[in-house]
Length: 155
Image 1 (cartoon, one colour):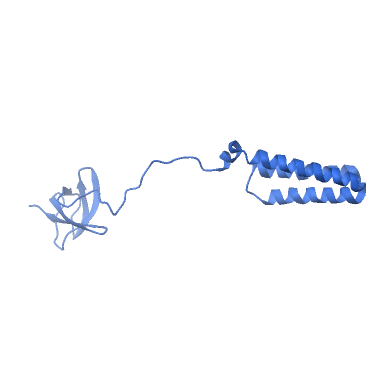
Image 2: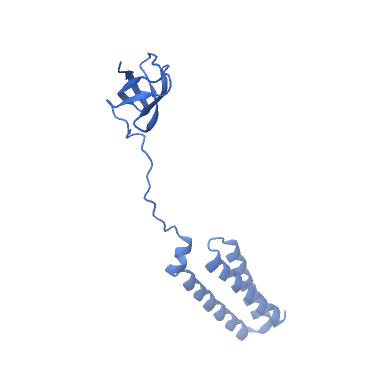
């Protein structure tokens, strides 16, 4: 194999490793292809160009890989692939209901025995103890059982 082919193997191996470490980290396949190209280039260098040239190619390839790993592991480069955003939002916890026992509201639909009640500005699905309540009636929360709000008619 001529020296141009060996140089191209080494060049493309380094380019694949640069792509893996700096531009698209974590793909692994690109890095493995780059490593295989470098290994083939060094092996052909030993085989066709002699051991002195093979040693030079091996040491220079290892130095280039070390430099790439150093550049790729700098905090600035790692920050591009790490999750750094902080989210301060929250989700309403169903175990801590926003409607407390004793709260009053107005039915939006007839409760037969379940329906919708408006508590201040919050629409909630509620149920009664079995009685029917017409729409537009004032109701009061009796208790909260797991995920059910139990109400009774005030009137």
